[in-house]
Structures are given as C-alpha cells and as structure tokens.
Length: 469
Ligand SMILES: [Mg+2]
Image (tube, rainbow, N blue to C red; front, side, top):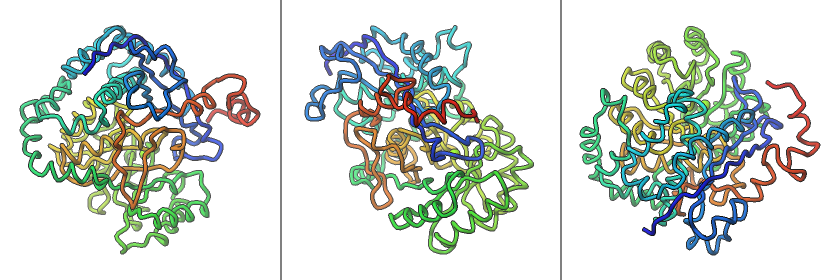
C-alpha cells in the first residue's frame, strides 16, 4: 500500500428538510430534518487541493480513490453545526499521521482518539464528542478501504480472528469478554465462513425490513399504501411508530395487520422512541399485545438498563421482546444491556458509537450473549453504513441471518446508494464505506448555505421561522 498522509480535513453541515412531510416522525421526534455532519479527510495526494466539492468523475474513481474520505455522522437538524465543530477537534488529532500508522494497531489508535483529556471531559465516550469520534474513525476506515480497493465489510471479512480483535479497545468490557475469548469465538465461526462470504457476494447476507410506512406523521391512507407497496416488493418485516395514543395506535396496527396478515409469515415491530417511563411502557404494551409485535423498540430511556430489564421481564409472557440501541452511547452501556438480559434485539447504530471499531466490540458481546444484531438505519446515510456492519456480523461473527432496517428516502443523494432487491440488501462492492454524497446535493442542502442554497429559499421559511418542536 502506498503511504498516504492525512494533511487536513473539512467539515460540511448538510440538512434535508424532511420535517416538511413528516418523514422520520415518531412519538419523541415530531419534526426532524435528516442531517449529515461530514468529516472530509484530505490526504497528500496531488489532487487533494481540489477540495471536497470537486470530486473526481466516476470513470477515474478507482485510480483516485486515495484522495479524500467523506464520512458523516447523522443528526436530525439543529445541533448539526455543534457536531461539525466537535469533528474539528477530534480530526485535529490525526493531522500529519500516515494511514498505515493509524491502522497498524487500530485498538491503540482508537484509545488514542478518546484520550485527549480536555475533550474527554465533555464525554467521556458519549454524546456530541462521540458522534464526532464516530465520523472521524469511519472516515479513516473509508480511506483505508479505498486504498485497498475494497468495501469496508470486506476488509474485516478478510481479517484473521487476531486482526479483528486488534481493532478493538477492550477497556471497560473485559468483565464481559476478553480478547482471548473473542479470538476463540471468531475461530469457531471460521467454519462455514467461506459459504457465508459467498452469500454476501451473492447479496443474500442481509435481509431488509422496512420502516417506510411507519412514521407517525403519515396519514392512515399513506401508511396503508406504503405497506401494500413494500409487501409487494418482497419485504416480510414491517415496523410502525407508536406511543402517542392507544386508540390511534390500535387503529393503525389494525390497518397494518389487515394488510400483512397474522398467518402469512409477516412480522410486525413497533417503536416508541423512548416516550414512556417503565410502568407506562408495560401498561401501554398490554393494549397492543393483540397485534403480536416481535418487539417494542426503545420503550424508555436509552440509558436505563434496569428499566429495559423490567419491561422485558413483564412482556416476555406475552411473547413481546424488547429492542434498543440507536441511542445507546457506547460499548459500556451495550455490555450492561446484553449481560443483564435486558434486551432481545441489539440495535447498533453506525454513527452513535465510536465508529466501526466500537461496533465490532458490540457484535462480539451480542454473539456471546446470544442476542441478534438488528442495526438502526432510520436516517440519511445510515442504510449505506449499516449494510457493511450487518454483512460483517453475518460473515464473521454471528454466522446467522438477521434483518436490517431500510428507509426509502434520500438515497438519491449518494454516489453508491444502498439497494434492496427481493427483500435483500445488495452487498456493496465499491471501495469505501458507501456514504459519499453527491457534491451537488451537498451544495444545495448545505446549512446555512449560499444564496442559491435550499435553506435560503422561500420554501425553507416555515422551518426556519416556525415553532421549534
Ligand atoms: Mg427507532
């Protein structure tokens, strides 16, 4: 691999006005504008001075892929600028470093990146500074993948168990899993890996589930139409938002079950986005048990391990599982959720945690505690990211097929959008981590943007001048 040095970075604040049509709306987040805080790593390539908005044409993409790495984290609007500012602070720690020195011992690099004591004070390893860490770590993976001419999932799939484990900072989790134990677990999964790798190459590694019909702000007709449409496209798992009114939820779930049936092998899931206290969650779900959901997602605060455990214990007799993870701060909280038996489904998020490395730690713990990985993907760019993580889980770690969320909007802004066919994610083959946004989309939706930008248009006024909810 030719030596590549990181010479600098840019950040971009990109926001899509999804609050206008209530895409993404749920019981807690009524009006989100799906946003991306981008970290663009620049390298010592002669072309890096062109800046991030002048990307090479696709025809020359392969030969120029070590120029830049564009990686984002996800927010839902206001505050995206704060994440960009935090990225500046974290990315400064790798300026001047060679790529090979960063990836030679990834676990150590990760530890180094969370060890700036002054920045650590505003975490540690959680919140805005951790979102920024995730963007920077993922950008390094993207850059590495491009220099190797591989998709990120394939780099990991080609690693030995020892190399996989070296990616992880095991501090705070050795009471749940040690590096030696992790190596043994990965070795045990080597059998059958060849077949699973072929499944990945055949795009049969990651079945998709859909949330497209489920946003709370969608009318019942729109919801029904979208359920019918997604059913006809081959989906078998459907998730709906709940949590504002038992009556309205019962009506919507009745419609959903009338479309997908009870005995046709179709699975229903519901998501409350943290709206309840623990006793409320248990009580509310008694009213929805007749609809036989596989799980209730985020029934309460994402930090409440004991609460999730209590809800899980109460709902188990009704056959309803508990899922969480999209706002789980880090591997330490996941350790507690998994080891205490508080969850049935582990919903890692590609951006919430500190990038690929921390996700790998959680995949291993989920495997150990026999909890399936069902990543959170409800956000711009998230399906592009998580398809890699689910593929890694299937090929290297769990060895079992799971499902992965897919939301059907904003993919047109990406150079290599996630694609679903026959109910499966089409395994990404292009080098990198798949979240490069088209330069024209980035320019148009930059915030606050230039005079020709969307956010300076009359259309933006209702959002900018409206009530902040
Ligand atoms: Mg959710």
